[in-house]
Length: 104
Image (cartoon, rainbow, N blue to C red):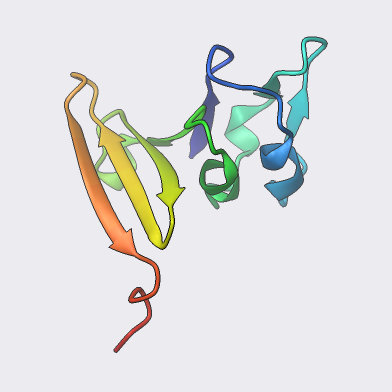
């Protein structure tokens, strides 16, 4: 499991650095986030959920049925938008109302 951090989209807000439970994300000399050893990523997606710029994507490898897809997310009010982009660039978005997420 691994994440990918886009230098172009990163604004250096540090939210991902603070969210990573493994202390794996650092800031470079330009203030941009990076992960030194992506193979050490636990796959918790905490950084993905904290990034407000969709600069961090979670790689859905073949072992997860993703075949090279990437997952990003952002929040608008009570709604969380999970966007999956496959290797060919096709996108699918799943919208979750967080108020209803745990309703049984």
